[in-house]
Amino acid sequence: MSEEYLDDNKVILQGEVDTEPEFSHILNGEEFFQFNLKTKRLSEVEDIIPISISSKLKDAYNIKIGDKIAIKGQFRSYNKMEEGKSRLLLRVFCKNIMNFDLEQNSNQIELNGYICKKPIYRITPFSREICDVLLAVNRNFGKSDYIPCIAWGRNAQLVNSLPVGSKISLIGRIQSREYTKKIENTDESVKKVAYEVSASNVCVLENEKTQEI
Image 1 (cartoon, helix red, strand yellow):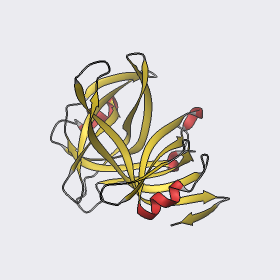
Image 2: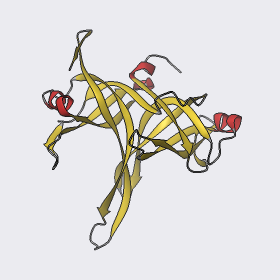
Image 3: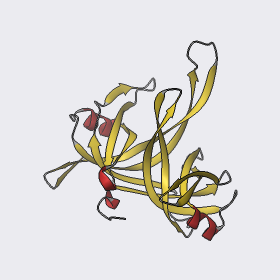
Image 4: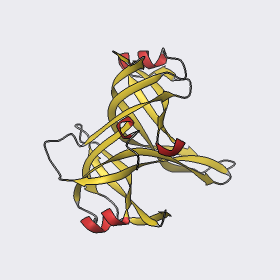
């Protein structure tokens, strides 16, 4: 695999395996499996993050529920057709298994990408500034991953001031968020989980120079 875009999308996660690995798909003759990894924030809130892993790595480390593992990889997006509609799926693609280290940050991500939709700025009921931004991050073979991100406070102001097409760098964490969605043409609703990157630092990349807030 080319190394060209590895620095644009870097994830390190540490946590506990929350589900048994299940078969997902075959790519270029290699089987891939999916499981959920449970990580804790400083507030003790738990994020449940889906992981995609090759059968070779899974079998080499005999991954099973309850294992504490550390992984290095990339946050990737996939389109899946459901009921005639395209749905964006997000998973961490595991490239390596590392030694578990209690002293390390359990959830960190670094992205370099382009703002591909107009950011959405708002103020929460608790008077916090927040801005939603969809980031297109280049991948090998002409592909891109589309990663939903949120910025807070001054970072939210910065992102909101940028036009579509701006290239930014951000550092943060991957988080899961449960929400309720109403089923069309019925009175029923279903619980779903959304995944996003919560940015702690945002920089504008411009002409090889970095503008940081």
